[in-house]
Amino acid sequence: MATADPAGAEPRWAEWRRPGPTPAQQRRDVLLALGVMAGALATTVLVNSMGAWVHGRAPSLGEQLFWSIAVTAPLAVRRRFPLAVLLVVGVLFIAAQARQTGDNFVPSVALFVAICTSGAWERNRVVARWSRIGVIAVMFAWLGFGLVRFLIGPPQDYGDVAGPLDPVLASVLYGLGFNVLFFLSAYVVGDTAWVSARRQVELEHRAEQLRRSQERNTRGAIVAERMRIARDLHDVVAHHVSVMGIQAGAARRVLDTDRELARSALLMVERTARDSVGELRGLLGVLRADPVAEDAPDGELAALERLPELVATARSAGLEVAHSTHGEPRPVPDGVALSAYRVVQEALTNVVKHAGARQVDVRVRYLDRALEVEIADDGRGPVPASVPAPGEEGGEEHGRTGGFGLLGMGERVAVHGGRLEAGPRKGKGYLVRATLPTTTTEEG
Image (cartoon, rainbow, N blue to C red):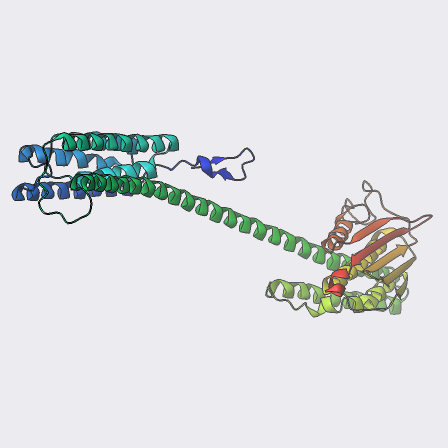
């Protein structure tokens, strides 16, 4: 494991500590030890059968077999106790050579594995470094002791030599070169294994971070989509239901005195209900559509063109609505057009439900770098949050004092980096103005 920084954002990989071996790895260590041990025993028997002893003489075969087992047996726990195995194998290796056992090859393999394991598995990296350096230094000291005995011993008969160097010098250089390569390889292989294991853990950590980031992004996208759907449902349902409620109330009041007016009001209720159902079906179609499709539904593309219908619906509720367009009309992004339409829709819904207004002015302005919609009425202004609107329970959705309607308008405008102004007008009435930038599309 790695130590996390104070902020908990990213582990400090330089302080990573390798976890202990798994049960499967421990079983493989036992099998490795048994395999090396079997090789050591077989090699000892063969060397003694040939009489090809490394030192020219050797103790009894039984003692040599004992040293073969002793040097290789610690490898069974090499990953559980890497430092202890390195020290034990190093000591037994020198002891076996001091006894002049017949085989030196398999004990050298055991020592190589012990050095590599200490570099790859010792959790304390300082101990791992200096313990290996210490063992290697002792091994070279032992090698030097052997070379001194070789040099001061009786002269060797080299027979016919063909090389340009002195035979003794060549023997010394050969021994030094071989051992330098041997121990350097063991040291580097151990460090490489440790670095590889750390990088593997780091990759897994980053993959897990990426997975969690993707999950957070997915949850954020789901929440954003739910908010968008909630805004659309609120706009559609609140507007149409408000109009239907007013028309139904008007029909009820004149049902006995003016049947034709009542009939007209009920027809408006019927038409508004059909419009509401149509828009709800459109929303459901969006939910069922391919989320990565780039084509916008027809309702979004024609959003600004549908403003006259929205104004006509508000007029049917008894309002005097003036609708005007200023500036040269031009194509705007579909999302901007839909957001502008929804802002006008919600503002008119609030006027119908809460304002007690008689006149409303709806203006659409095509500015150089933005689309602006403005809805101004001559009503009584905002309803205090603590006072429910007439006909409502609690008044928490009136939208004129920070309810869901005004909140939804603000969210729609903020998505496009726009600005929403909403508040009482000087004198009397209420004003909603939304400015939606169109620069990106025009310049792109």
